[in-house]
Length: 199
Image (cartoon, rainbow, N blue to C red; front, side, top):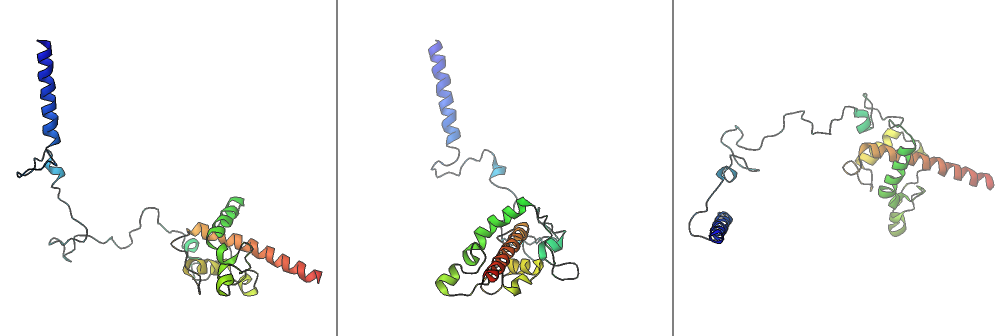
């Protein structure tokens, strides 16, 4: 008697599972059973769809003017543009220059700048070696004379064959790279002075 009851329960469980399993995805000429229909038919707008509700006919709405994405607020414009309120290039690096910032600058320089400018910043990198393309050395007078804001502008927006790194390198890392470049300039100028003294 107990065995029959257990078999009936087992048969009922298997039948229920097979019905639920075939509710969706089974081949049939009849329409599928939608157990929770609101998951299948949701009131929604697909990307690039038309809409008769809005005056411009587009379902996708443009952001309100002045909308800023999360984490993208640029309150300190000088930090992100390299220019002060008057539009002049910053003379000094706005980044707090500590050992961690200098290490970060050296690491980012190795990734993005070293292939062309070399480890010492002498401009004899791969472009010069393989293509004879003149890459400036950081110890050149015109490069030393540039303000930090001008260098930031070049790194951000590109110049000549150098690509723009605005989208690739965050602003803080660009300032850290500039701090490292200044260190390389000092080392390069010191080496040049020592060479001149030994002649």
